[in-house]
Amino acid sequence: MEKRKVLVVDDESRMRKLVKDFLQRENFEVLEAADGSEALDIFFADNDIALVILDVMMPKMDGWQVCREIRAFSKVPIIMLTARGDEKDELQGFELGVDEYISKPFSPKILVARVEAILRRSNGGTESGEVLEVGGIHMDKAAHMVEIDGKSVDLSYKEFELLAYFMENKGIALSREKILNNVWNYDYFGDARTIDTHVKKLRSKLGEKGELIKTIWGMGYKLEV
Image (cartoon, rainbow, N blue to C red):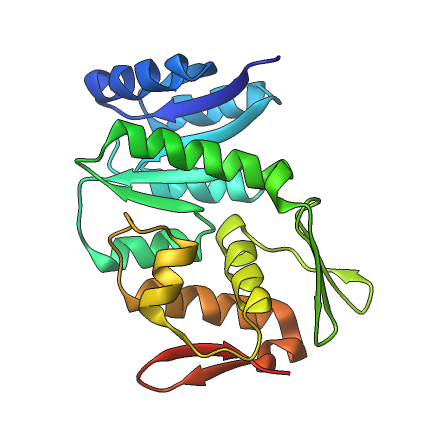
């Protein structure tokens, strides 16, 4: 089986080594970059990178700039690492199309689990062989595709996961806590703004169908047809 390639970008060599060691144990091939400029050189020189783990605070070019450059050309999954606990950073990351956001210090095992989960879904994992149809929204989970009236809708990994959760629970009122637990996993330490930001972007991408996602004030959301 061909090794999946992960680009780890962090100006701390000790952090890169820690992440690299854990990923290599799970049979990943790891490329390293010590700053944003080097990261872009490596990324655009290699077409086989499956996922990028990207630190926010770096010399020459920070993680936000690197993310913008990559997103202009690629939908490759991106996990952002940061030492900050600032909600603004987290929201900015999701606005830029970051798939996961992990604050330092973190458990390397959890990071590897996130990498595995993202790649499993983005490659059409075996557990996602389902087709969902709700209110004119067509979702093929295995192919990781969403269509409305025959037109493809371009969703990030987390937007796709969120929509799938809504469609699987159509007509059911879902609290923000329940959404966090099921879409972001129990070990995610976020808050309601994370969900609200994703719902806002998801509604926008769904166009008129976005109106099917109803806000339940003081609680959460419901997909209602």
